[in-house]
Amino acid sequence: MTTHREPFDSVLDTVGETPLVRVHASPDTVPVYAKLESFNPGASVKDRIGKYMLDETVERGEVPEGGTVIEPTAGNTGIGFAVAAEQMGLEAIFVVPERFSLEKQQLMRALGAEVINTPTEEGMDGAIARAYELADELDDAVVPQQFANPLNAQTHYETTAPEIYEALDGEVGAVVAGCGTAGTLMGIARYARERDPETYVAAVEPEGSLYGEVLGEGGEGTEYKTEGIGTHDPSTNELFDPELVDDVIDIADRTAQDELKRLASDEGHLVASSAGAASVAARRVAEDIRDGVIDAPYDSVVTLFPDSSERYLSKGIYRSFEEWEG
Ligand code: PMP
Image (cartoon, rainbow, N blue to C red; front, side, top):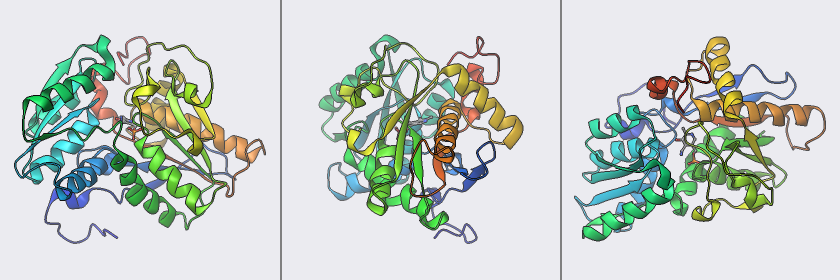
């Protein structure tokens, strides 16, 4: 285990081994724990896939030395991939829909990457299509494609999940996490179900997102402000496996924002909207376990706080709901 008490050779050695911290607004008998992913060097959960996926991609010979990584991303993946690419001697190009946070785009550029914007109306689909077009124009490029690449979920199966199980001596009752690519939840859920097939698993999405359709729930695709989770087109996602999910919990933007403000003022967490949504959903699952509505093998719930609110200050994340641009 990383001790953080000895010098490291590279910033990449500091990816992972993030702290797991009790969320106090949860039932005494069914504690909620959150893994604080902003402790990673690029300050989000996506540093994990940057390091793991690029390592594997280079090892498999899918990109030559000095080659180019092109990825469609809401931003955090770009930062995670940019940190890793630079250290591995690769070029990086990221295709980002315009609406996503400017802080993230500035950080990707600072890390040496090129950023290309696609129109907000075209969504992630537009960014994915553009990434492949660009790759076709170059002869040394690879598109890891986090929405379809099993290495994304494998990263969390190999790193995030074992860290959680070690911290809780294996006593994990439920796993609750936001789904963007769903890599985080799928990797942890697969590990959890192998440890105990009864482990309860819930996916979290913003109200207006359509992951619920995959479990046969209805819904209307509408815009939402919560950043980093949700989809309007579940068919573009190849990772989300309904067999591994008991429920999809929809959280309204306003509820997510109230909670991220509460997490800051009451519990000292500077976390963003996807963490606010995950925290509310995790608390609901904990209350249902306490009340006997949900059966879980242990009285505990684990979630993740994927990134930091500092990345969204320009969008007014701590202002009123109306002033928050999302
Ligand atoms: N929260 C934020 C802020 C993110 O950027 C992401 C990644 N899109 C997630 C949550 C969800 O992670 P995943 O893609 O592994 O589902």
